[in-house]
Image (tube, rainbow, N blue to C red; front, side, top):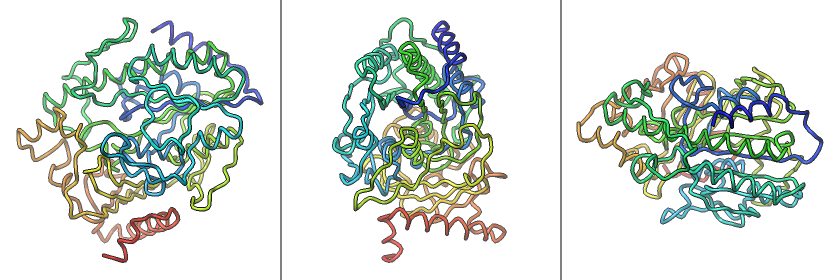
Length: 459
C-alpha cells in the first residue's frame, strides 16, 4: 500500500498540463462518510490516499450534501436537483421503491449524446434506468478495493480514446447487517487497521460509552479500507495515463452513520468532505466556498463543455459550476446552501427544509408534530441500542428528547454554537436573521417547485 501511495503521489507531482481533449470525469462517492479524514484535521483517521489527493487538488472546507440520505443524495449529485424536485424522495431499493421522475435526465443521459461513454462500478442506488442510462453497469459489493480497481482498469481500457464519465460507488463506510463488514474476506494486501476505542475522539452527538466507542472504532476501520480503494482507483488512472485529462471529484453521500448525523440536516449529516482535482490546476488549495451537491452536475457539464436543454417539465438547475473556485481560497457570492429531506426509508416521513449561511442555519420542520424517525441501521446499532437500554437522557451534548421532538423552526448561530445545540428561533436578538433565512428558504422552495409548498395553504 505504501508503494501504491508513493507511485500515485509521484505521478501527480509531475503531471503534465491538461490537454484540450478528451475531458474525462471520475466521480468517487463514499457511503456514509463524515469528516473523519486526515486532511480534514482528524488526527486518528488513516487516510493517506485521500490526503494525497487533497495535496494535489482542492479541498473544500464548506461542502454540503443537499440531503442526508443515500439514494436521495446520489440523485441530487447526478441530476443537480434537490430531492423534492428530482422525485427521489427516499431509498430506491426493496420495498422503499422510490424513483426519480422520468422527466428528469441524469448525467449519463446528458453526456452520452455528447459522445461520452458512461459507466458505474458498484453502488448506484437510484432509479429508473431511463433517467440514469449508464452504458456500463458493474455490480460489485463495493467494499473490496482490489476488485473495484480491476473493474476500473477494464472500463478505462475498453473505452479507448473515447471520453468517459465513470462513477465509482463505494459501500464503505456504510454499516453492514452488523458492524461495518470488517470481518469480511478481503485480499491480503487490503489493510485491516484496528483502532483503540478508548482513544478515539467522540463526535459531540455520541455518548461516551463503551458500545459507542467500539462502534466508532469499527467505522474508522471501514474508512481505512475506503481510502485504500481510492488509492487503487487513482493508480489505475495514472497507469492508464488518464489522470491528466480527467476531472476527479471525491464526495460522500451523507454524514457518519450514527444517531445525530445521517438522515438529519444538522451539519454532522450534511457538511461533508469534497476533494476535487482538475488537470493542470494549482495544487494544495483549500477553498472556503460554500458548495452544494446540486453544484456537481453543473460543474461536470461545464468541464465537459455540455449545455443541457431542459425538458418542458424540468426546472432550471439551481446549482452552478464550482470550477472557478478551484484555485481560490476565498471567493465572493458562495455563501449560502440549501437542503431538503423527505424520507430515508419509506416509514421515515419527516420533511425538512434548510437554508444555511456562514453564520446561521435555519431548519423548517414541515411535519414537526411527528417524532423524528430512525433509519433501521441506526436504530439497530450498538450505539442507539445502548442509549435505549441505559435510558440515557443525553446523546453526547444533545438531549435525546430534543433530538426526537423538534419545533417547527430551528435557528442556530454557528459562530457561537457550531454543534447546533441552542435553538434561537424565538430569541428576539436574532429576529433579523430568522426573517432573512426564512425568506431565503421560501424563495428557494418556490424557485425549485417544492411540492410541499401546498402545506402552506392547507395548514
